[in-house]
Length: 89
Image (cartoon, rainbow, N blue to C red):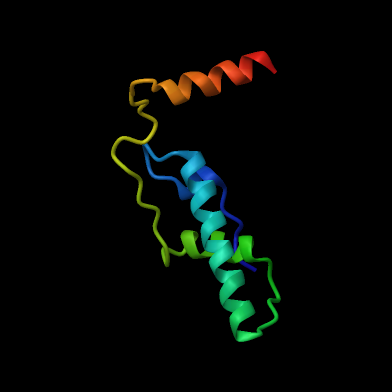
């Protein structure tokens, strides 16, 4: 049985925990879809298999350089109308 790695063991310095969760979820979904297409029965949960893929280096997480940066954008009239509707409800 393989050691079950924790998130800090899988993350490199500066990588986001949120990005790891998303990457593992996407990989788990991919594993599940491939098994369904092949009509395979999985003996392990897809999330466990996805974590093992990252732990063994078979898959790597690539993050954008500006992850976590909030970009300013102008509010359009449509955005303002949506905000008005939300406030009124």
